[in-house]
Length: 292
Image (cartoon, rainbow, N blue to C red; front, side, top):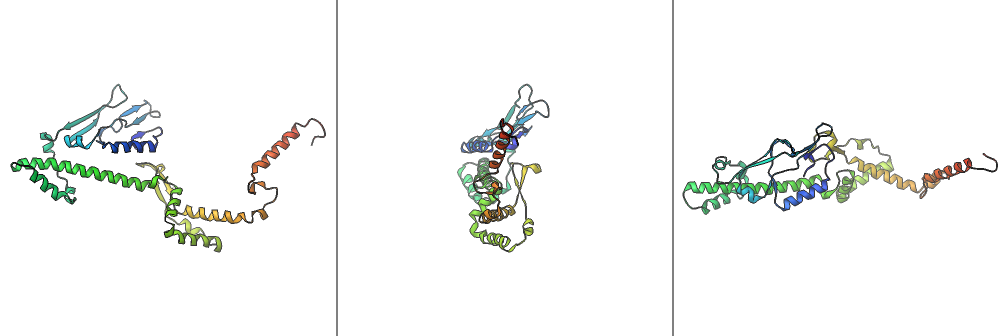
């Protein structure tokens, strides 16, 4: 599902992993987490050939979570198979152990619907105070789990939008597209700076004093190679260099000798290379007449 769930060897395609995560979300399946060894599959006995991956997982939907309030997923040690056994311990919401481990979450008080949920659950159950408290305990756990699940999904969607807006790559092209979209805001300042450099000889030195942002290339970056340095100054350089190239096109023919074919529009230096090669080849293989 994620690149950090595999150790060594090339990771899977991020687009395919994202599609798989989308299918799980559409099926309302949630990763139950685990305790113990991180990876559930292993191949290779030597350090340089060892590959590990979290292939096997415990997944469940909200109905299962409401039925089994207390659960624990354990990754057990493996023996003959290359897969680690997975043990899921679970107890229904009617168990005494689940009742003893009930915890009131302080963040529940911050939810605007909290008071109404308490009143509704309390009024729904008939009987004495103990019966109502038990019913309230189960109802609050179910309500809290639903709130947290929805919040986690929203957080993930927002994080994905921040990391890769509109599915763009996290490189200089991304900045160019962002600038193009918000040109009415930043366009005048960028144009004025570039024109001062081109027409008035303004120094580019201040442009190098800029903030460099480290964009992560992995879901869970752990070392410097997992980051990509990126800065807005590269966009200025591209605009200025492109403008200079366009201006030179108008006077290029007056600056280039006829023998300099690589500078002519529609001509390549390979034309001269081919001509020189064929000339030498002909001279080497000449059978009659005076040799040069």
